[in-house]
Amino acid sequence: MRFQTIQLDSLPTRQPVKVGPGTRERLIEAAGEIFARHGFRNATVRDICRAAGANIAAVNYHFRDKEGLYAEVLLFAQSCASERYEGSRDLSLPADERLALFIRAFFAKLFDQGRPAWHGQLMAREMVDPSPALDRVVETSIRPTWVHLTATVAELLGPAATQGAVRDTASSILGQCLVYVHCRPVIDRLYPGEAYAPDRVRSIADHVVAFSLGAIAAAAAPARRPRDSRPARKAAPARRKAPA
Image (cartoon, rainbow, N blue to C red; front, side, top):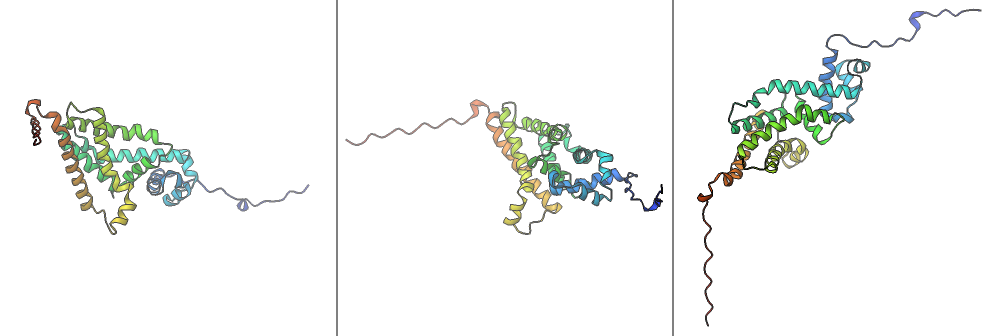
């Protein structure tokens, strides 16, 4: 029996997985930008790996799958945001200052161009296009933010405020912020050329702060006004008798 001699260098070789230092971090950075731009469902592992300069098998090696990568991206973004905007939850400040800091920090996260610039965009997209990781996002990021905001709003509205009033007021504040992200295509058509440079974002945030504090003060005023200090209702004028 004759055996065929096979040259070892002629055998097909499997591409090695890049698992060297920095691969995991590059994947997270690249995935964050792509997930924020295209959403969880439309983003592809191939595009992420191409942007990160890594092999597709590296995702399986570090994160098991696309969903695992997405979860790690969210955790990384939340960690960065917590470090960068930690001062926005200073409980030693008066409630009105805490709300102002919260709103300005929220806008900064939505339009941040720093690292990671995609954090606010990713979280905003998650709200309108939920991924399988939504439950985890709510418990680790959204719920703590909501608890902080509603506690601040409740303090400003006063003890007479109902849970419904607190909830609706907090939702209105967030709506004023998120409209600039979720309605961006419409805003761009209504105001062509509108740019969201840092000065413009700060101006919008200041407007939302003033508008929200004014609305809360107006809502809280009737409940805080002493009962006997409220203006008495004017008596209705007596009706004149018709001439005989």
